[in-house]
Image (cartoon, rainbow, N blue to C red):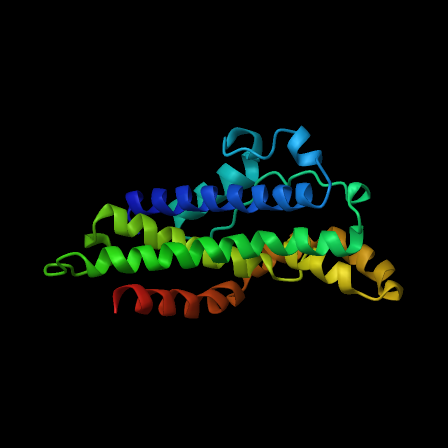
Length: 214
């Protein structure tokens, strides 16, 4: 992967992560919790959302070295006590993050397909030969699909873990709370030391490429 494409992946990932976090705050506000709004987190300005390690260092390292790329923004602050039905409402707050990524991914996939169908494909031998706009839109679709699926994994601190926590019977919660602090270690092991993530996402890439470029 060349430097230009690495920067495209990096840029798309940061935008997708920030929109993911904003969606959490917007739905929390819908259910009565204005914590994220008062903290200035319901904004498209990337600065309040950036976590230096998770938003810049880790994804930049991955994009430039070719290792699996993960990224995160500062989690939006949420106060369930301000919600009308905290357990139910927090389930929707957790779901909306991956859902927003899937909506963005599907929209970008159709846009990339329309752009590709409207161009002269003679002389296109590889992905890098495509016009810059198509590569950006395709990459944005792919990144959002990856981010949506990745966040549904039931591993803390991903959204899938909060969803699991909301539906677990109360008697299992003490054991879950003991497991939760080790989630990030497990997550890093899955991403960097096993092939699980690549195997999970390879079919997504193939199917998206077939949809856009076939």
